[in-house]
Length: 114
Length: 114
Image 1 (cartoon, rainbow over the protein chains, first blue to last red):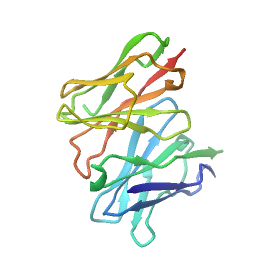
Image 2: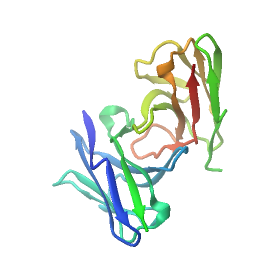
Image 3: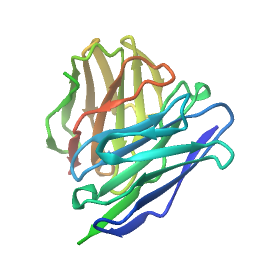
Image 4: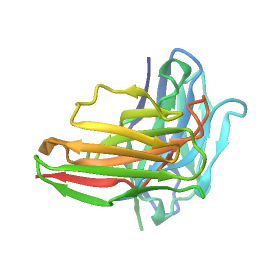
């Protein structure tokens, strides 16, 4: 079985501050990990993904995430928040046992204040 | 072209109506997906088509009937829906169902069942 836990359903940061969205996963086989962003009334857009290789993954819009196997974590960070980063963020995991179907976390709503 | 299109954007239907949702991609992807997303919740997988064959049905009620006429097109036929079926229906596609293939999402159809 595989699952994802996103700590904090709501996160609020000031514009220019560090963004940290937490994701922990559970997987009995090597996982593939994804972060998606969803703006209001839109579909999901891939920010970044980890499959194999380098554990620090850089994505779009200045986001990055680090795969830490020992901590079973894949936290999403951005050094400086912009107002346009306000959205819903979903962490997702897939693996061979699930036929590579995505299993999403419950999501974290990011609020950016001026 | 890295776009998944969905029509219509909005749909309001009565419980006795029959309607269809349409999804199209021209990226040459061979896996296509239907998700249901309720407000403030993550997407829930409904169906997966791989090479135009239904490969996953997540115990979805028979009032939802998927169809994949060709590799670019995915339909979801709706009949005798219930008000609790009101949600955002998202279509996605990926190159295939392999391990690292990211899913590209459409903007969704907002369905309201009266």
